[in-house]
Image (cartoon, rainbow, N blue to C red; front, side, top):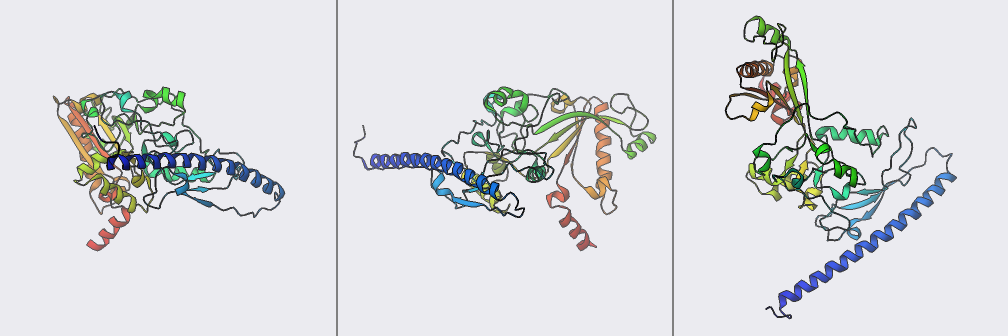
Length: 405
């Protein structure tokens, strides 16, 4: 039995006392701040009424030090809260869209902070309900329950922000997922229950709104899918030529006609990174990955530094699309052959037929081989990544073109 006056026990008691005091201080500050916001709103409303005819009234943001609002010392100096204009429910330019956006801007959060209660995320758990949903929304009803960093939509999240800023979309808007269920049943597969197998997408992403429907309904938590699955027909001029030259043969199931029209199942996938797994893939530690992502995105995601407890990151990058020919269930069947083309986006060649590179011919060849394998009873898949020029971007790509002339 340890002595009550043991130095280590004394230190632990002092630390616990400091923690309790900090927690109480945080709660007191938040309570005072809430009262101040009410007074500020009343004052602003009074001033707005008196100055209704002044169309040039300027509003400003008043930053409140974060140190007074957190339950643990700020480690980076990047955190804080700011007051936005308290009449943030201003009508849109068309007078049609209002928002219930809070007057408080939350720059970052911390583990153990008052009110922070993330929904548990057990990445790789075999029980889908025990694994939990990906929650990244910063809506008022979800921000304290988030278990992921970033935003839905990948690179399109910026346009979503513009729509809200311009009052063309309500900040509290929730998509209606009625009748938008996946067009096919997919999985589960053993890889879904292995945290090391899948680290850059959510294997439950196509099921989230329906799998966690009760959480959305009962707790008002914003949960969105990160994968959507649909069926379509594909028509490319080269495929008609492929039929004419005998490389593809119409079968009425996959290759539907002499025009080379194809039946295809499409999977749109937004990136969801499990940071420990991504770090392991690159042979680096998670802390180095988090710091690099934070510093080299202009400090856009401070919670990469302050929220080590959140292991998921939805990065602002393009996703991918999977084009599956034939029976999608055969994609994971080890007893059949798989013809697979992994293709990085090339807008110049794939879409506009630029002759400066040969990406589109390779893509067409990949589609042909995928269709032929599916017709033989196997599986044919084309994975199309939205990362132009091996993720360097078109500007760098064109500079390389110029330099190689």
